[in-house]
Image (cartoon, rainbow, N blue to C red):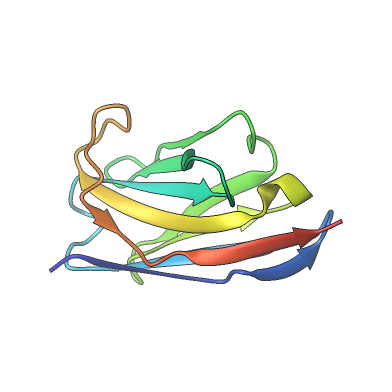
Amino acid sequence: DVQLVESGGGLVQTGGSLRLSCAASGFTFVDDYVIGWFRQAPGKDREGVSSFITSDNSTYYSNYVRGRFTVSSDYFKNTVYLQMNSLKPEDTAVYYCAAGKGSDPTLVDYDYWGQGTLVTVSS
């Protein structure tokens, strides 16, 4: 079975940094998957943050985080990371990673979700 486990959330001050991890099992990054990062702030809808394509290492970012967040991966550990810099209070949310079979983040169905990790940015 595919499983995703996030870690790395916490409390940070405005302007600080955090690195989230998403450890995947049940498939390898040699396979064709899209790993997405999403977030949901209190009282708001879930929104996409970034996408990572395992087949070619492509990455995509939402306008809200482009230039501040960076996705990387460790194929040996089957883990994707979300490095978050210059954090703002509006980045406060539960962050989820999700995975779906395929290579197009606009078409993939995210069938697998992690449990989420809370990021709180204080002002």
